[in-house]
Structure formats: structure tokens, C-alpha cells
Amino acid sequence: MGRRAILTGVLAVAVGSGAVGWYAGQQIKSPGEVAAETAAPEPSLITVPVEQILLSKNVVVRGQAGFDEATDISTQASVGGSSIITKLTKARGDTLNEGDVAIEVAGRPLIVLQGDLPVFRSFTPTLEGPDVVQLQEALTRVGYYFGPIDGVYGAQTGEAVRAMYADAGYKAIEPTRQDLEAVEAAEDAVDIAAREVAEARKSPAGLAASERLRLEQEIRNAQVQLALVEAEATAIEQEAWDQVAAALRALAIAQAGGNPVEIADAQAALDQAQANEMRVKLEQGNLVEQASTNVAVAKASLSEANSLSADSGAKQRLSDAKDQLSKAKESLNRIQAETGIGLPDSEILFLPSLPRQIQTLSVEAGEFPQGPVMRVTGAGVAIRGSVTTPERRLLSEGMSVTLEDSALGISVDGTLAFLADTPGGPDLANDKYAVRFEPIGDLPEDLINRNLKVTIPVTSTGGEVFAVPFAAVSAGADGTQRIELAGSDGEARTVEVNRGLSDPSRGLVEVTPVEDGAISAGDRVVVGRDLGLTTGSSSDSDSETGTDG
Image (cartoon, rainbow, N blue to C red; front, side, top):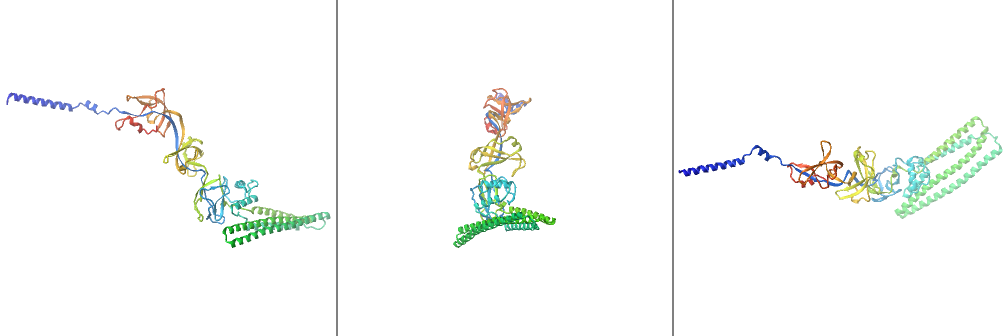
């Protein structure tokens, strides 16, 4: 090998070694260089715009929309003990007015009247109380009662009830045969006591002639009056019987004709005529009895005068007889007062307000009800709900509300019409207060029976203010409140602010800069910093804050 060839080989080796060394130097880094290249990048700012809006703090609850004053009506077994529904007198959608028959149970009516006090007992003669006052007021309104509102169920009240039933097409509950027999027995007791008094007044002769003549004339006068009363009673009773006889003939003719309507009308006329005959007999019997008593009293007066000279034993007998007569008369008056037209609690219903509309009917004729037979409502619409104790402190009646159904896309304005003073109640927990909302104007039909969202603004800024997300406000070491605004150069500057009203539903809080002009609408407020763990630019962060602005 020549010298030139050896030199060339050495140079080639040297050049190759240098290249290898340069490449190795490029791949090997100092610890400082490695640390510099692996450090976290400068975090970017997450911002949203400062808004200038009206802020409010709301109470949001749910409310069930429906007709106001909804009431379920149930029935009781009739006076005969049956609870079968025999007639639907009204249909769904009909109006229920005062004096109407709501439904018929076992052939007996359920009559509706207006009153706040529910029926809690049957009405019977001599009954007294506030429920009787309510009944008399209702009977006066519907034109059947013209007596005093004295709270005593007397004969006038009973006759008003009789007239109301008759107009409704039914017979009122008349006195039973046992009641009438009790009256007759009491009248007999008065007669016997009067005769005892008359016997006790008999005394030896010796009464002055003039006084005797006077007393005897009183007896004759009373006897003449008795004869007149008896004759008139006979004529009146005959007239009442003639009406019954005519009604019987009319019924026979109707039955022969076979027309059910004519038969029913004839039967009703016969019932009325028979009831009138019984009343006439009772009234005329009382008049005759009174006239007979007057005769007995006149005779007793003569006997008493004759007994003035009787011994002490006769005087005691007369005193005892008088006491017995007084007691017998008191008993008769009481029994007569207690005998009259009744009104069973199963046939009367008081509702706080009328008229009402029948919203649902739950039974058919021929069925035995298993619960309420109908639901009636007022004409107004109400939305009912409840609030908690903290919410209750923020509310007052008359506040404006928004009624909303997001599924239907319907929103209407309303008011807070009622706010309970005490918690609890039907279908409410012990820590919930009942509330009722009413729409302003008519509520769309689509919202009836829907569960609505009810928004109640309780406080407001009263105008537009600067608002930022809660996360944008922080406290300094000295207790001051501050926010950070991002400049166009990407740098943040701190602005001291005062916090105002917060709106939790939108996650925003009112801020007022301590230095005027330090904030403008649209400024970018820092709500966080992107440490490289998420993607996206600051311009995308508006949609990540969850604000409504």
C-alpha cells in the first residue's frame, strides 16, 4: 500500500469520528436543558363576559292547577236504610244551584243549600242551634221561610221545609203514627186533669145568686162556642175528605188508563190530599179541644166558687188537681211542639258557596256508591301547592308569580292569593305551608289539571346591574371582594368590588366596582385557569359557565 493511500484512510477515519461525535453531542442535554423543556406551559385564562342585566331572587315551587273550591260529595243511607242511587238528577257539567236536588238515594232527595257549617245532625221540631239559624237563612233566600231567624226549629220552619220538598217533587218527613198517638194521649191527660179540677171545685150551696148566674152564663157561652167550633170543624174536615175522595177517583181513572205519568201525578195528588186531611184533622181537633177545655174551665170556675166554703181537705184536693192540670197542659204543649215536619241529615247538604259546577259523576242509577258520588267545583281556577318554612318567610299574599308548563311551552302571569299561617293540613307534611295561586285572566284550558312550575320573585335589583358568575368573585387577605378582568394582551388585572344581590337560579351575583368606570359590560371576567388538562380556548368558555345571560 502506498503512502498516499494510507493518508487518505486516516483522514476518512478522522472525518467519520468527528461526525459521530457531533451527532452524539446533539442528542445529549444538560439537566438544566431537560428541566426547561419539560416545564408546564403558562396556564391560559378561562373567561366569560360581564353582563349588565336585571337580577332577581326567586322561590320556585310546583302547583297543581284545577278549578277552585273543589268538593267531593258523598251520600248517606236514606231514612229507610238503603244507599242505592235511584236517580241522577244532574249530569256532568250541569250547574248546582241553591235548592236543587243533587242526587236521589233510595227515592229520597239530597237537597243542596248554601252554608259554611256542615250538617252534623238531623233537624227535628224544637231543635235549637247555629245550624238551625243557617237553615232558616237558606230557606229565606230560596223563598220558603218568612219567620224570625231565631235558631229554633218550630212549626214555621217545618212548613217551609214541607214547601221546599213539595217544589222539588218529594214529600217531607211527616210525624209518625207514634208521634200522633203521643199527642192524643197528652190531650186525654189534659181532659182528665180538667175533670178532676171540676170535681174538686164542687162545694156545698151558699154561693150568691148573682155570682152563680154569672158563672153559669159563662158556661153556656163556652158551650155555644164549642158547638160552633165543632160544626165548623166538621165542615172543614168534610171538605178535606172530599178532596181525598176526588183524588182517589182520579187515581182509579189513571190506573185504568194505564199511563204511568198520569198514574204518578194522580198518586202525588192523592198523597198531598191525604197529608192535607191529616193536617186539617189535627188543627180542627186542637180547636175543638180548646173549646172543650174552655167549657170545662167555666164549669170548674163555678165549682171552685162553690168550694170556697169547703173544708181544708177539699181545698187541698182542688190545689192538687190544678197542679195536675197545669202539668198535663205543659206536657201537651211540649209534645205538640215536638211533633212536626223533620229534615234528616241524609237529605240535606250545605256548601260554602253556590252555584257550583259538577265536574265528575262517579255513579250510575242502580249502583251502591263506594265513595264520593260527584265532585263539584267553583267557577274560578286555582293552582295549589306548598312552601317550606324558609320560603314562607320570604312570601306575602298579593305577590306576582309566573305559572309555567315547559312541556306545553305555556307561561302566564298570576298572583299569590293565599298563604297559610300555620303548617300542615290535608295531604301536607307538618313542615309545609299551603299556598294558592290564581292566574291573571283566564288560565288556558290546556293547563287545567296540570302540575305547573311557579316562580315567585322575592327580591330584585330594580334595574340593570353588572353581574358575574359566583366563581369570579374571591376574597382578598384583607377581606375585600375582588374580580379579575382579562386584558387584550392576555394579562389579568384585579378590580375591587362590592357584592350585591345573588341569583342562585342562574348562578350570578351583582358586583359594583369600588372605583367608578373600572368595569364595563362585555369585559372578560376570569372564572378559572386552564392548566392544560382540558382543551378549548377562552372564547369557548362562555358556554361552560352554566349562566342564563
